[in-house]
Image 1 (cartoon, each protein chain N blue to C red):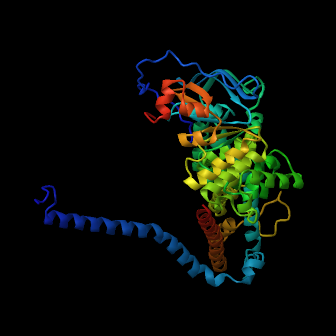
Image 2 (image 1 turned 30 degrees about the vertical axis):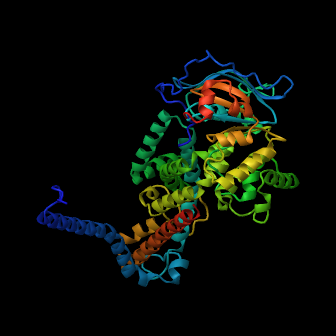
Image 3 (image 1 turned 90 degrees about the horizontal axis):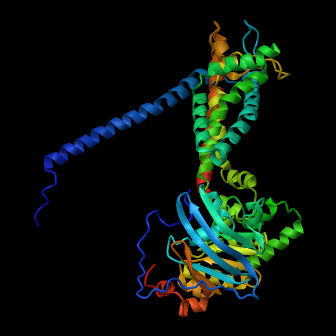
Length: 287
Length: 289
């Protein structure tokens, strides 16, 4: 039971960012522009673990078919936020939410909405690759479809190849589809997990620090893959690695102590942030 | 550089070394005493039983009193049938109970369930026999193979349940999350992903439980009863190796004593085989992970 989402600790850490002339609060950018399609429309979203507040009044509109990076120091609530986007946080007992969270117009937490159906539409890739150890490469990719009742051989075969190609793994495994998923290298396993998520054809893919356990070459491959995913999927990626956010995202959201501090075009966040706290974090002065 | 004042003197060091050696010797002796009974059992069974094991023993029914020869074919088959019936009763109950403990139960419910399982585990086997006698023998007015199977099966439940729980808890949470994130219903995640990942461990638990009950005699005394002939109907009494051994061992005939030893050797061999298969399986498991 080691995968509790990170959350702020009980005591209030003293704010390490000291700015002399702090503006009361930098306006949270109201991106995306009105013409842009919105994947997640989130208003006044707060979340608690028991008594402890992990997210505080987050309002953000995450654009569709773009890569949105979420950055911030450990415990800032970024993983918590990500897990709320497909209701994975419900696995942690004692969580409570407030506010509204819409995915392509439908309320994620509406009455009668089941987490299972949300997760079909909002897939997730985890920090540590986790292919199912009892299954072959092909079985791993297709498990989501099979368990959702799809038996048509032609459909399954098509999805297998498409998903592995989309995850940039096909050429490496096409001759060994029946080998165990766990026989692959770490980076390949992570791409297998991405293929497994893509196989059920979600609209949105959440990635929780997908490269933090990988070497630089494997990381580069995944980043490249994220670039290609953008054409057909909405991607939200949590990362500790600011270079990664700068390299592969269109938009960046900076979270700090459970609050969304700033959300803007990635280039702007890293070159000319509107909020001094963001500036302090991206320039490496803390975190 | 000056030596640390905390170093032991040579005499103290020698004394400590002697102490260490003495304790090691005691521990080795204790360890030897622990495994000695196993070798004693196997030794006596081989000495007494080996010469009585022949083809007849595996193919013939017991002979009537006074006649020499005969075998325990019906008891060997009977034990296997009883184990199969016990598995039908005990394995699903135990596995589903274990799944409940590991995946669904609240802490409070689990505390009670675990406590109940531990108490059940400690219920004397003769008591199981008496309970099943009241449940299945008295109402149907006949001893039966069914009743024997149920008595053994109920004994398996707490064992299978606890081992199932233990191996399910060992399945990393990340597999559950990965499957749930694919939009798979929770019960399917548990049955297809979690249970399948832990399947070898669960099978190991089942075999260990079978090995535990294979030699039980007391629960069968008032249920399966025993039978000198082939059982053709599970609603009637059935022979079992432990019952046959018991009956022959307390008889006054040398030829039956001889066969009791042979039966004990075969029963021991069966249990040993079950345990060895567990070892082989868990070795495989360690290799693949």
